[in-house]
Image (cartoon, rainbow, N blue to C red; front, side, top):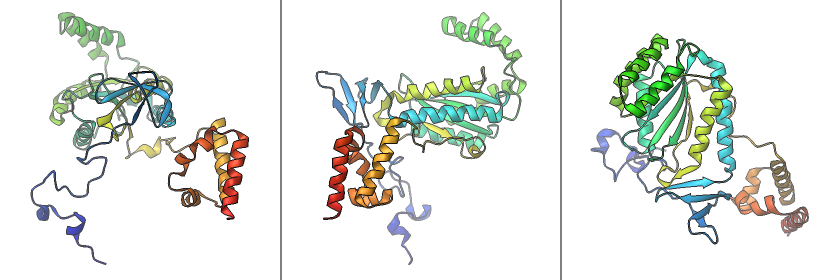
Length: 340
């Protein structure tokens, strides 16, 4: 059956005419101009400035400002999975490409833009000026000022000579700049570590200083890996954990971690779709099986039809918190209702 393109909103550019914020076709909820949902906070009894969230009642959150909350306590299962799978894949990335063909790349926004716009700028840079990057892992971290900040691992074709790089001169140079600015000692130390760097790396520094401002990507730093894959995975992983402890209402729905989809198949060893091997998860899976057996179904689709699309959420207290006797009574009631 033919479908009228005008009815779906997917008209050609000539048919649409000038772009309008009030008539944009084919928008997704995560990148449209609609108002973003805020985190639902519940005040801790007896406290004026501490809260809990629906997805993690064990953690306590404090409100930093009208847009930012900070967590104190244990991460959620999703956050723990994100940190675990990032560490595992970071180690695999460095092991696959080699420490001498990988670089640590940081990009800092200086215009205080939204992460969605910052990601578009990064994608534009990668598409037009990123041919030197063979593969990458990207982590989004909010700075204290609220600006988006990228930590990246990038693979390159040339040898980065990490063992020959003068880290002592580099660290002293950074400290001198923070204390005294671009002094004579600063310039001397800078020339020292530049002489120890790979020639291709020095050329990339010049290239980035010239090209990055065109894309609005702000300041950047590109350095060899100082340590092996175990250490670098912990180093990158801690940034994700620090970033997950801060939540911004205006950033809700933004992607925190991105793996290069062009080449990740050759080094990706883990995704976030897995179950923890723990006593609690074993109990949960066993009880889901008992619930399905009592309800007379054999898969998750059957559970959704029997208990609703949000069955795992609505039955979470019975599945997780009830003791064995209470659970058996609940299952027996479910079985009796099936035969009614």
